[in-house]
View 1: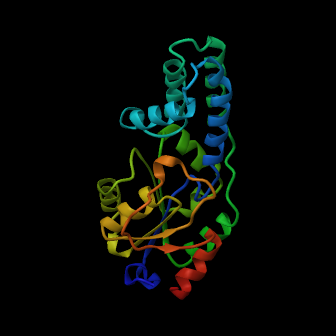
View 2: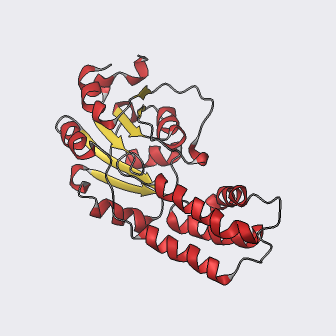
View 3: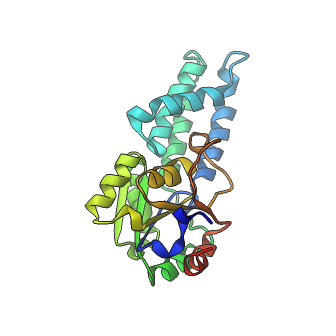
Length: 237
């Protein structure tokens, strides 16, 4: 194992939230399927409405950020542009209604999360850093039943090196003693490694295309399940 991810150097363990502690991307995938079913019949031949949606999402990140509300705006915009304005108002209404349903979805913790947080919390300080809409993410955190495990909780607009550096500085956490656990190589591993921390990658079965990284030179540990984290921290391999 690379020295960069030796388990015995860490004092603070941070966790991502969506698709690391609870289910999230599955709901977006289902919403995309619904979008395609509703919008495609109104688009001209040769238009891939999902490609249009993905491009719209990517272009809107700098404007509207992440989360259900940003996704809903992108769905409405993509539905209008991909159909040259021919999409019926009833379809737009269905897209908006589904976004409201997503905002009210109960939190579904992933297998082993409560036990893992309890175990790791006995030996390390725990923090949570998640990106997305402040209102929605805060609601999920507070209704999850696991907020009490974390010394600090941060909902950030973006997960980049500057954000991690600033957040850890505010919390008086030395990056050299910081380990971050998450499902995204792009957002959870590489920026933390860049500022001198380390990462444990716990892949989720589905990943948003924006988060996929094909080539990188970051050193981090890979675990098959979050349940393996206490043993990895204890054994260092």
